[in-house]
Amino acid sequence: MISRKKWLGAIVLTTILAGCFGSYYSVRDPASGAQYYTTDVDKTGITGAIKFKDAKSGSQVTLQSSEVKEISKDEYTKGSTAPASKPAPAAAAAPAAIPTPPASTQ
Image (cartoon, rainbow, N blue to C red; front, side):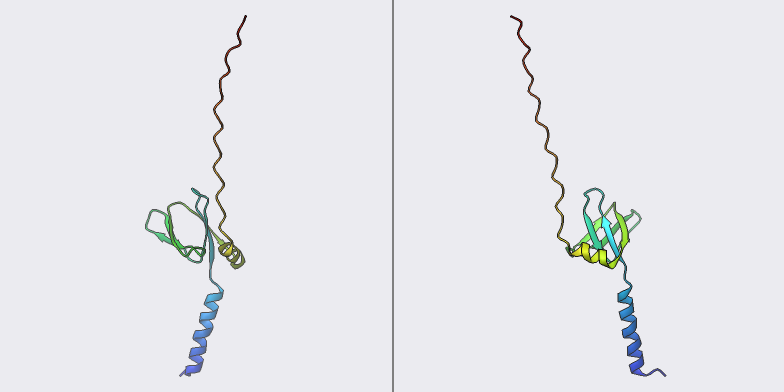
């Protein structure tokens, strides 16, 4: 019979090893360009939507359309701790051209 100490040691070692080999993901919303970082991505039903917890905000996010990429722990750490980038400002509409009056022929 395995002693209690050996059994407890095996459980602790398994827990440590499981934590070392986790997966990290970068999720991009192509509609808005928003970038998210997470360690777990779940599919929701047959529609292809995904659900995950964003590492930066801690919010649960559901996206109908997304680009998911497995990344390294270093990329995850950099991305999830970086300040949120501001979206590019919308291009200003060009002012309407003012028509010039026809030249008079006097």
